[in-house]
Figure 1: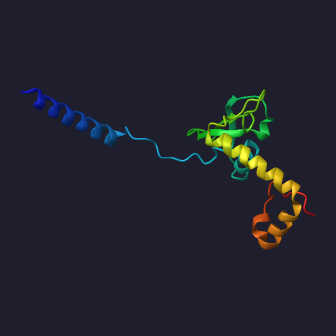
Figure 2: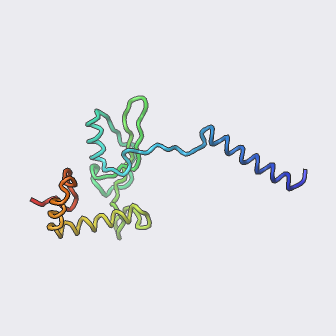
Figure 3: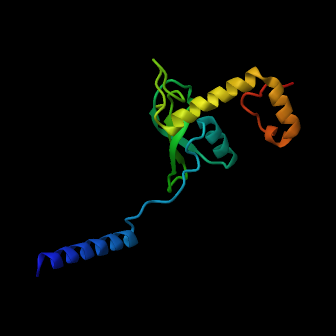
Length: 150
């Protein structure tokens, strides 16, 4: 067999192996974590409304109170039905002397942008009042930055 034929056979064999691995379960899981990114207190509240239980199995950071931590991942234990939660308890974004998400990540940049928007809304309550008159459905739940309108 020539070297060219050997290369073709190797490529065909590799492609066949990858196809079999993908078909047998070598693919990526597609399940979405329903609680990732939510505050811990909101997750616990949701689970209680479903008569569900939660257990914290991992905590990263110590800058936030437990209720303010963000759920970084969750999974449901099959035997007991308990949701096992991993928490992220550092600040929303890193600053000098305070740990948090890096500004090099979308999460860090979004957290900084969100904080600036909330600060602007608190400094401009007339804008909140106008929004509430135009879109009362947005205010069925509290809108961060527009808490003290009345």
